[in-house]
Image 1: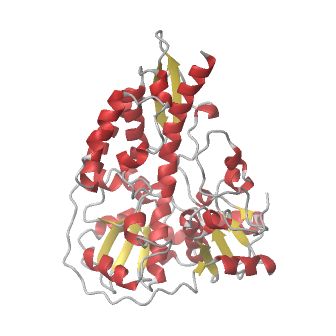
Image 2: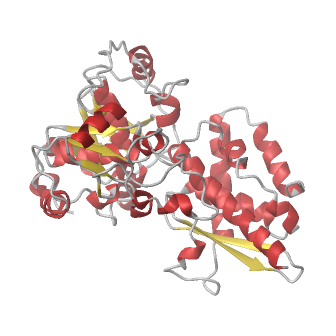
Image 3: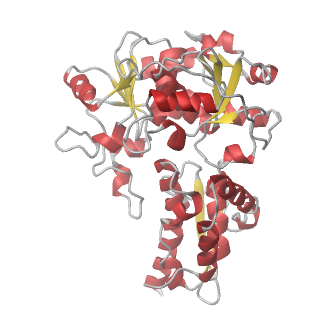
Length: 149
Length: 287
């Protein structure tokens, strides 16, 4: 199995060193503040979005798009309809900043349980499933491109 | 949205408005508690003076699948400065979903001096009211909790089985796709925490969020709620009702609506919900 994208591994290493829950929350809020940069542009999709882009189990109503790059990699774009869905926004930013443009084999290897490294093991089951759904959509898009060439 | 008192609720006193909360921010007899679905929201800003109670880390037993016991509840109350006589006002994201859950757990310990802030965090933010990142501290209280009473508002799987056999009403408050079991069969879908999909036989499907106005998170009027639960679904005020969802959090919202806004005296929340029922060996399931 391929390693995850190096940028993602660096972020995971950072979070593994977080001293406590509050520090983790502060860091994630800072990351979520960059969400506008990864929001799907209107020339790609407009509301109401195609339901095929909806993240399953995400209570924050997140959507994911995988856009083809000339070099065969993917750029990921997102929307989160719940304006209070900070965790989904943070997760989307992490995925874009670390997986967009990365080799597809690496993106396809991203395990959904990175959610617990980023958000902590105390996250609720429902929240964890929604965030893992986001990761799974990105991973699934990379696998599909690999399968279809 | 109309004034709370004019909406025809059975217990309008169980709700407070954002105006009321704004006027009681410094009231020493009131503790404002934020309880959210999103774990980052409180840290990103909250109502001044509000403390956070987290369902996972504060209200659950750390080992068993159960709620905290009376000694832990006492420690929690002491830590957030709540005394037995304190009026606790809950609010949160997602239409007060987790706020109602926290209120329900408080009630297991007999702390009934509680309210929900109508509209929750969404309405407070929409009105441009202040939020702060400052986490307050309060003098520890001495709180002697009643033993947790699970017999009145909480249902267990054996209760549910008896309920089915007696043809009493159940309300499944999950989404239609969860109710039909369709979700468990979707490719790439995260595991819902259950081996089987579907619903408890006889349960009516009323997604919890139908009880609120989506634009501002306030509760619908009693007349609108009766149209959903009574005219549409056939519930009656004197019914013995059990509500459930996946782990009992969304159904605590419906428990609150039926118990306090419509005044049903016999409503229980089955917190084992689908993550228990959908994993039990040999129990009946409908699709």
